[in-house]
Length: 127
Image 1: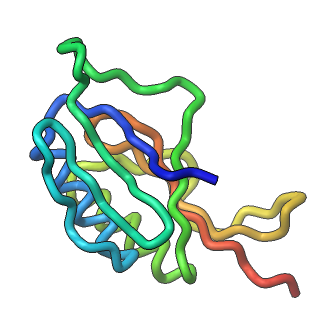
Image 2 (image 1 turned 90 degrees about the horizontal axis):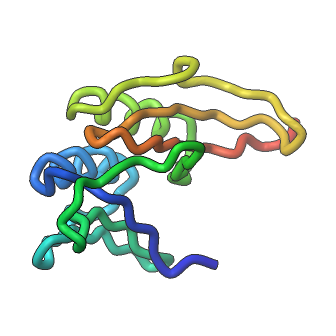
């Protein structure tokens, strides 16, 4: 459905370091800088951070969350730990199982160094 997702940053180097660490836990190669943006490419899509091209400060989207798919709970935990170690802030409940109408999910939430809300998600097999 999506070709790419981009969030704003006010510090490209800091954002690249953060996302290299968290996305590296998912097996995604380091980001590549192109002028005022950094891109992480996979066979199924692209994630990017960008300095705003209008020259104004980047701001976060209130109510927005960007989720990254994980293969298992250990990958969610590694993603969360890498994020906290690289300037992210753990938010909401600690990483763990959440029960819902869609089944059980293993989730972790962070705010990246710019304040964007991001999530690591593993859909658990139905019992």
